[in-house]
Amino acid sequence: MKDLMGMMKQAKAMQEKMQDLQQELAEVEATGQSGGGLVSVTLKGQGELAALAIDGSLVNPDEKDMLEDLIVAAHADARRKLDQQIQEKTQSLTAGLQLPAGLKLPF
Image 1 (cartoon, rainbow, N blue to C red):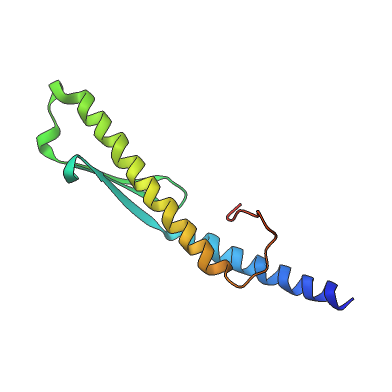
Image 2 (image 1 turned 120 degrees about the vertical axis):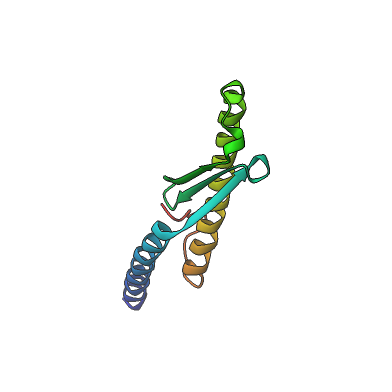
């Protein structure tokens, strides 16, 4: 019975930490760049686009395809950085919890 009570306490602690983690992750932002900083994209915690900045020198109708490619590259860079920040925050908040092997957080 002691093990069951310990598991219940651990589950409650994990639930509280997960709520804190979700709140923190919603506030995380990452900015990615491409074209040597000519295009930058800022993403919020859930991957939504928060900001897009394009250097005026790129606004040329003849270079539309290049601009589109730079935006996609900046978005990919920001997403990679955002995923890394989320992983780091998840690991720091779940440190010390005895989670089952193979459990990936956040869900």
